[in-house]
Amino acid sequence: MTSLSGSDTSLQTAAAAPSGGWTVVAAQELRDVWLTARGPIIVLVFSLLLSLLTYLAATNKELNILDQRDTVNLVVQLTLGIGVAVSLLFSADAVSGERERETLESLLLTPVPRRQIALGKLLAAMSVWPVMMVVAVPYVWALRAGPGLFADAIVAGFVVGSLLTAAFASLGLLVSTFSNTNRLSLALSFFIFVVLLAPTQLPLSGWFGDLIVRVNPVTAGSIFLEKVVAKQHGWGQESALLIAPILAALIATSLAFLVAGRLRLQGGIER
Amino acid sequence: MSDGGEPGSTSVGIATAEAVLSVDHLTKSFGPLVAVRDLSFEAAPGEIIGLLGPNGAGKTTAIRVLSTILPPTRGSFTLGGFPHTNAAAIRQRIGVLPESAGYPLHLTGEEFLRYHARLFGHPARGAGEVAASLLSEVGLAERASSTISTYSRGMRQRLGVARALVNTPRIIFLDEPTLGLDPAGQRQILQLTRDLAGQRGATVILSTHFLDEVEEVCSRVIILNRGEVIAEGSVAEIKRRAAPRTARVRVPPEMHDQALSALGRAGGVASVGSVDAERGWLTATFDGAWLDEHREAGMNSAIRALTDAEVLVLSFELEGGRLSDAFLFLTEEGQR
Image 1 (cartoon, helix red, strand yellow):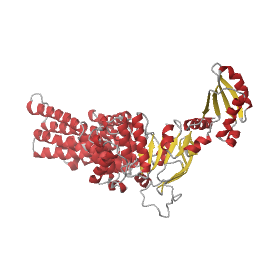
Image 2 (spheres, rainbow over the protein chains, first blue to last red):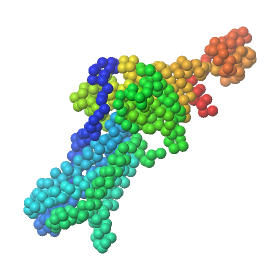
Image 3 (cartoon, each protein chain N blue to C red):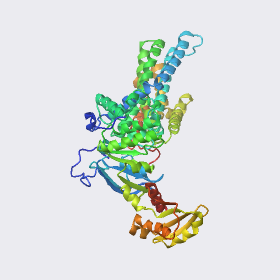
Image 4 (cartoon, helix red, strand yellow):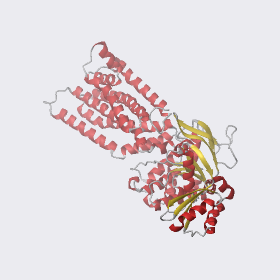
């Protein structure tokens, strides 16, 4: 072992304050997601699932009871559901996972502001969604009934998915900021997602059902997609359904960044 | 806490011209629990200060407050001229090896250091140079491309020390750096610690409960117990404060009673006791005030009394001549 001479000029000068520390965090987190097994395996499994669905829809006309528009809608909704869920789980691991692996302290000891650390992590977690959307594009193309349907499905899917990904990834980050264990963070975040997802599978009717549909960002986004993709309604006609996803994205991201400024070594409520 | 500019402005002051760290009545509480109470000290450049204390004494909390991970409940400190409220400026000037430092096991040592150098504002190319240089300095150059998962505990600790140096810190906090290391690993870390202070001129705050290490490398010691400073000074001063007060004497078994009587008459001896009469072991405890007055030579009175009584002395051992004895004496005294 050589001695610590400190003669290297690059070490003699203390590093300047980092500008754009979030880009450094985001770049490292993106490498962690996409250059390790996690991201690629999830995308591979997802593409296999879409392949199976597309193969059945394209080749087995007798078994395919869905209209082609409905099939495209199903592919987009499936992409959205899985993309949002994976982003949510990645962000729910972002802080509590570092706590559990005991790597958070060295990150907090850097001069990068807490909010920039949170932003970098959030962007990396959200990167799953656009990748899944890109993976879904050829499948939607293969199943399209016409160029109009393809464009509607891709654009509407991307808009709704981006809003819901922002909302749920921020929610995951928020929960993760307060959680002392990763298990709690992942379980609680996923539970909230499932609770909000469940009404999409329920027959909701009457004023209460309509209220749930419009207030719940997941049901509102899902029905918006169904109306635009499967039923060919215009965006303007159904724009009210985008209010809940937009508000959810705004509120969740604002809260996440507000709380991230007080990101601490220990979870729980500050004493 | 805000980002800061250079020290020396009217709002920022240095406690003394020499002190790189000045801690003033620092207290940290967690609800009703006071983890650190009224901690005050100063540290000069190049000093190695040992932070000692039993488990739960508040060492790690003190380091976390001084490294801006935790805000103080009361009191203040300045580091490199920056007040504790300027966390970003302080973080630029400190290096920390946390007690329970985790590592991203899938990264290589070089990637890990490059990432942290980037977080401290080094440009991409500069970060690579810093990483390579530090890996070489801590003896990990040959393992730079290996993932951290393949590193031994000692190698990970050295990597942690290298990480603490990416910003050329003025103060380095090492929290239990040798915990769990084999003797060779401990030696390497202690040598690194000496080099940090001696060659880089950095101030090192070394938290440990391995007292031999403190005696070996520290110029000054702060002993904490239950969050309070119970002793502070050089290693020699601390040892003197808890100077030996008890002598353990062995005489031939047939002279045991004779020795007991002779020691009872010796100057300064407060009490004598038989430990094992069959083997001839007994103890003589000296009066603290008398011993303070007569210093270590005072114990010669016991030897003189034994020789005057023509008792053959087979063994005469002082209890409390090492830093570990002083530490135990002080911490036990603090608990009484």
